[in-house]
Image 1: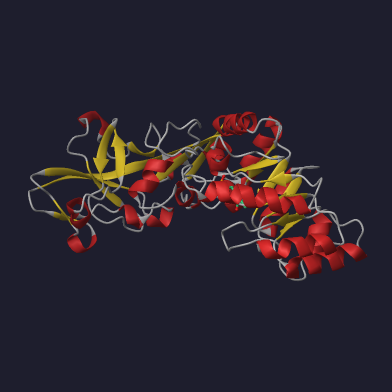
Image 2: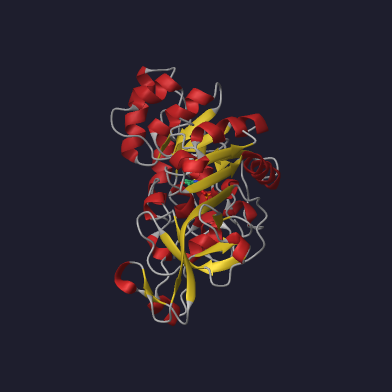
Length: 378
Ligand SMILES: *Cc1c(COP(=O)(O)O)cnc(C)c1O
């Protein structure tokens, strides 16, 4: 195993995932510099956005990162096993009865409701060695966090001193969205009920909005993994993830031939097709399928780069296979066993996501478990 991934020899694998950990650490340093003097915490929830907690965390520790965020307690225990003194926050608050686990491993819950705060306060009163907690204030998502009208009352009666106050931006990737300024104003006002307590406001994209303050800590996630925190502008981050899939078969089809399940793609003229050993069971989303009706509506479908040429998906993404139209690809790139590029060489996770009708977070966290995984610069 590498982390919790089975080791699969690249020559046996349908697709090979290469993760550049130097690019990952360099992205952390860029975000740290961007944060000015604020602490640059790394968000490593969902197995470090799919790249693997056991490889990601040591690299960031070596780069100087000392604060980590996860979503679940089980993830926090994995991070703790890799780090001595690092600060670890668990974003999903805490489930009833789990406070002793937080204390046993020195993990900090992010408390976001009266009920969580009361249970934690009861535990902390009886266990003076309990780690400090953060308090999450909701400034507009109605998801997690204390509603604004409860903040003053909680602050007045809180029997412990929180380590951190935080909130989360709803639309940071659109810097023109007026909700950013409104959330900033609300947070600035509400954190005033906790004087002297450090505060955290920005995710990756928030860190790149000029008018938004970093406060004492940023919580950097998706940009560490190479996604663009400034959509619509050049990506300042380095590519971390590269995905290559292998060609299983090539065939020439006549005009009007259909490809894949339900014949949702038809050849316009004689075409050359390649069948790739990758599918939705590998996390390559079926929503990227190349269907005639999508083309008719001008909706982009998935592509692969073959010898540098963009080749469109032909038909539905199947569980284990994708067919692409390689008619325009250079002949020397086309042979059984050769690889084509699914992510990388400028085909960014952002573009792959857009072509699947989703966001880069879903592409990263869906990265499959059947890939041969190669970690560069571990
Ligand atoms: C996931 C998450 C982050 C990281 O967000 P990115 O957009 O990936 O940088 C930060 N804060 C909270 C509360 C989160 O849930």
